Length: 120
Length: 108
Image (cartoon, rainbow over all chains, first blue to last red):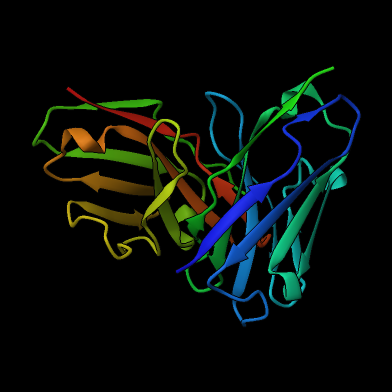
């Protein structure tokens, strides 16, 4: 059974760096074809894909946010970490991590999400 | 990467068919998938690889994808299907993921 859970500080000040951790179980990020992605959703708005890391350490980023994002993985801890620099109130959103495979290119299992508010 | 556009809202009567479109250049050349999201909940995958239903998803959910439009169809819509729906695709030319703009389905 695949589960994912996001964690991180719920309140961040403008210009600070956000660090989010996705802790998962039920799969290994060393298995060929597996990836973990991050998706966010501002209140009342649509889903936005942010980044994804694959089993082979390949990283992919949203072009509009690439300069601010870094995604890393710790296979031994079953964790994926997303950092986003220069946070702005417009970055206030629920941040989700999700399981992905290269066969379907879809996000088939999602975490519960974590709300991050950017405010001074 | 391409952009995916959905109608903001779709209304349907109980028992009728709802169709939600997802428009984007070349979307038919890629696999499309669909998510259902109810208020306060995480998205749930309801269609992947254009037409496939994950285990546990009712048969009334079906998908198609051709040309510039992917479509999610809900046959015999039930009140429990009222939710936001998002399409998503992977652009093979850029290896990037894209979500659609989202559609609110109202069952009334």
